[in-house]
Image (cartoon, rainbow, N blue to C red; front, side, top):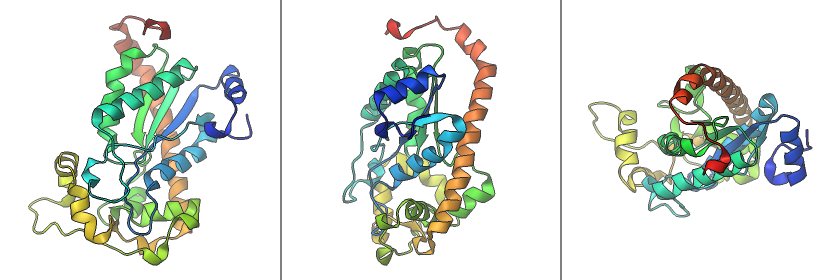
Length: 278
């Protein structure tokens, strides 16, 4: 293996050597450039999946691709520093990245999401461009928290601890580099939804995914925080990274096993393709 498994730090020859010895997997962090409180960096949703990918890569004999730092974040409109993409731009960007990697020889391409709102768009994007790929290429789009057991997820991201710039996200960034977090500016905040007939999480998709500016409007008073970042520590971040690493490794292996079962069926109805067919 090369000294680094992070492609931006590797040479073209090192990537070629990896592929020629039988390597086939690349983990591509997909995130967002957006507010994460007055204490957290705009790249929180980029740094976290990138760090989890770096920890998972050795167990999967994978490389870590350059991160995609922009995503679907129209619900944060109004927040200083936000960069968000149109759905069609995001979909096209994922397609070009995946096709480029597939053309280069990768046959297992994991799009590792770090920003909730990207999740559905990523899955549908992959379905849209699937026929542009040769039949030996598999693309796995999922968020780094997808495979966490409920008790682990609940400790760092969920109804009880919040979901944005909270103890989980802030702790991981502190574990990566404490200089990226200004804990003097950290403050806890939980949005006030008033009297609901259901619960806040029932509204995540139908409100935030559909209404530009909605997330920032509810969280602006707290600077974009939904949770208790003041409880964050680098030690908690190290633990969360380990849990997420295990979850990512398990999801990738499970997806490979499931695709081995379903592939003959869904491939049988499609004409064989090669990269040169595009």
